[in-house]
Structures are given as structure tokens and as C-alpha cells.
Image (cartoon, rainbow, N blue to C red; front, top):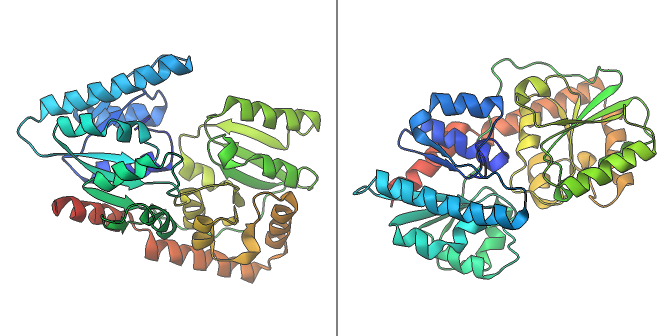
Length: 349
């Protein structure tokens, strides 16, 4: 992992990690937030976190590869004589590049595609095909990878979403309306369109919740907000430790991404009985399933229309949408089912 707490893929594999006793985490960059400290304390003997202090891009990349090598050797030495399986997920192309070294250490490899399956460098598909197990978390990603990986079965395993124990009946009640955009700050997450679409909409307060991954993009967003003098309307909350508490304080979730694997934040919003709006890309469409709440990711007016559709819903319509969304998540995105699906594949090796 890049960090123990970083994004949606890390969340999924932490859930797998916490349910499988002989599973270990190697994180290439030490996390310092409260959740990471608690996890580290609870699973002290099962987590290896390596430090990467560099800000310089070149030095950071060199240290990243060195940390990968150190983690491979650490577990190779610790579990001599045991079968070892390395899980590499979608963003882990650095690990894929080191495929010969990973094999030399005696690891089998499970590759899990967490994004849309599109890789800029086509040779990566050749490496993926050599992995012992290949999985995706969406049918769309399977179709993309399947164009290049033809000799290896590709397994679709849905993400696991934790359903809150107490289901609150959500209504749009806050004034101003509280809107949550939960994603790391990056151009691929397309937060700019939210500012453009809702800049002139009255009675709205927008919170961007996520770590800043792209500083230049963040500065562009801040510049737009300052220029229009709407700093009190668009707020950057940074990385949020406890999203479950956070979801309960918002009326609408917006996911404006240009690319997704499985959109966890939509599924989580639906699990918390929040009305959701999302960009009309294949993975979001499969989850949201309602034209009224899907917008063209390049057109602010399309997002603004979705927002209008939300506001026009009657109370009974809101209840129907919320109920149908929750039933969909429960039926298709069980944590237990996700963990068991991975475990069954691993047992088959």
C-alpha cells in the first residue's frame, strides 16, 4: 500500500486484512493520522510501515522502489519455507514493474484492478497476464482488461461496504443544504466542475473531504473560490478520520470523477441513506442506476440540473430513492462476501 490510510482500495484490503489472520500489510509511506495509529497498535506484528521522507519527486521514487525491495525481503526472510502470496492492486504499477524480482523471492501474485482497467503502458497487461490470480471490482474493468489479458480468467469481486447498524431516515433538512464531495483533491476527481456548477446556486454549503494529492490542482480550485469571494460556501476539510460520523451530517453526496473503479463513496452514501449525484461514467452508472442523478462530467449545467432534480423530489420520492439504494448496497456489496470470494480464490492456488 502507499499508506495504511489513503483511499478506497486501501479501505477494501484493510477489511480483508482484518478478517484473515495470516494476512500482512506492507505500507511504503508511514501514515500519521489517528486511524493509522490505532490500526498499527492493534495489529503491531502484522503491519510493516516504511518511511519515505522525501519531497523531491526523483528521490521519492527511488525511496519507493527501495521500500518495495525491503518489504519483499522482510517477508521472504520472515516466512521462509511458507507459501507466500503478494497482493498488488490497480495503482501498484511500480510493483508490477518489479515482477522478475517478486518471482525471484518466491511470491505468487494476486493482481486486483481497482480502477477502470486502462493502463497507459500496454506492456503492463503482459505482466498482469502472468499473475497467478487476476481480479477486478467491476464488470467494466474486466471488459477493458479482457481485451489484452486473454489467457487468464478474470474474476469480478464486488467491494465490501459496511452498513451502519442504526439506519437513520434521511431528509434534506439543513439550511443551507450541506453537500459532501468525498475524494482526494486531484484533477481526475474533477472537483472543479462542482465549483462551476454550484457557484451561483443559493442555499448550498459544499465540503471537499479528502487529502490533497495534486497541489497545483488544489491551488486552481482555491483561486476560483477566492476570485468569486465564496470561501464560506466551498470548504476544504482535508483528510477525514471518521467518515461514518461525517456522512450523517450531510444531505447530498456528489462524486464528479472522470474515472473510477467501483465508486465506494457512492455506495457508502447510499448505505447512510444520503441522496447521491455522480458523473455519468460506466462504473458510476452501474451503481447509481438513475438518469436523474447522473451528469456529463465536462458540463457544469448538467450537474446543476441533477442538483435541481434532487431539490424537486417529493418526500415520498426521496424515501423511495433512499430505500432502493440501500437495498441495492445490501444485496450486492457485502463485506463478508467480498472477503470470502478472495479467500476462496487464494485457497484454490
